[in-house]
Image (cartoon, rainbow, N blue to C red):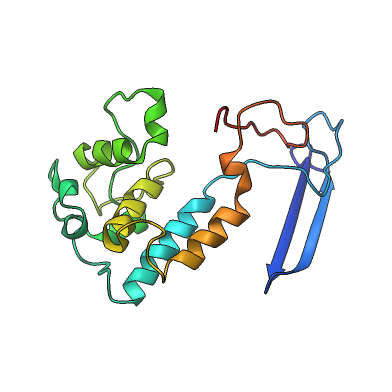
Length: 193
C-alpha cells in the first residue's frame, strides 16, 4: 500500500446515463474521513482541455488557423515582439508565456480583461517556439482570449455552446465559496461568490 495514495473517485456518463461511478479510500491524509459518493475534490487543469477543444472546434470550422499569428485574432498580443507567435504555440505550451512578471493585485487572476491585457504586454520568458514550458496558470487566458475574439463571447457561438454547457455542469467545484467544506477532500471554496 502506497502511503501517498489516500482516496479517489471516477465517474463516467454516456448519453446522460451514469455507466461508472466508483469511489474509495479516505478524503484526508490522516485517513479519518472515508471517501464518499459526494466527496468534493479540487480540480486542476480541467479547463485547459475545454479551451483547447473550443480552439480546435473553431479550427475545424475554418474560423481559426492554428499557423496564423495570434495577433491576427488578438492584435494587442503583438506587444513585446510577440507578433509572429502562431496560435499552435499557445496550444502546445511553447509560446514562452508561463507567467506575468508585472506585479498584479491578488484579485487580478479573477479578472479576464486584466489578465489578458497583462499577457498581451508580457514579453516571452524564452524564445517562442524554441522550448516547451507548461503554461499552467496562463493557458486558459491565452487560448480562451483567441477563442473569445473569434466567437464574439466565449459561449455566444452556437457551435461552442454545448462545450461550455458541459464544462459548467461538470465543474461545480470551480465556483464554490471559500469556507471549510466537510464533504471535501482537502479542497477550499471561494468566499463570496
